[in-house]
Amino acid sequence: SQQGEEDPQALSIQEGENATMNCSYKTSINNLQWYRQNSGRGLVHLILIRSNEREKHSGRLRVTLDTSKKSSSLLITASRAADTASYFCATTNNAGGTSYGKLTFGQGTILTVHP
Amino acid sequence: NAGVMQNPRHLVRRRGQEARLRCSPMKGHSHVYWYRQLPEEGLKFMVYLQKENIIDESGMPKERFSAEFPKEGPSILRIQQVVRGDSAAYFCASSPPGQGAGTGELFFGEGSRLTVL
Image (cartoon, rainbow over all chains, first blue to last red):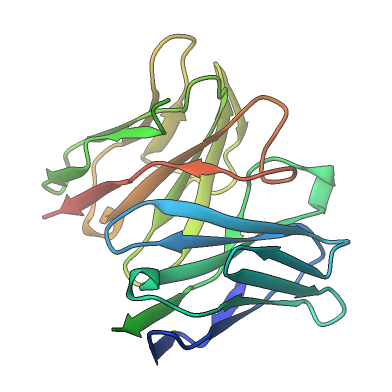
């Protein structure tokens, strides 16, 4: 299976609830990023967490990283209907000392927030 | 400041034809990446280019696919003799010099959706 796998595959919640998505990966990483994709659109960067960080916040987003378990979670608090989208984690790894944009994406979590 | 521009947004080709997808990176960005997204899947890295150089093409199929980023003009992803399995969304991303996903985010275009009949 590939680096960066998310669960659940789909999540359906009511507006105002919190949404938690998880991501697991296999190799050591430089950093982990979360992206959002609205249906039929491009990806929008949400947040980046480096391998030496454990938690990061940005507005209603909270990301955690556990390198010992090779996993990350994205929490969206007080969700809104406009948060409906697919969410992808993506990693860059240490192989060859590369630091460029060769991202390995997970399969994504489809989040639906009902008004 | 315009974002990453991709065209065409939608392209329909018959089997055996050629597809050319264009990408203009954000102003000031000299690194371009192409990714492919099959239906219901995440994105897969294809190729990384800088002006006039292919840096990493480890994700490119060995045949029929090629990419370039000339000194002037957009980056081009070219698919020759398309087959139905090439139907996908192709995304371009860019980053400024000295910065990639190792140090920051990638900026993605809206994608080009190729349908092969």
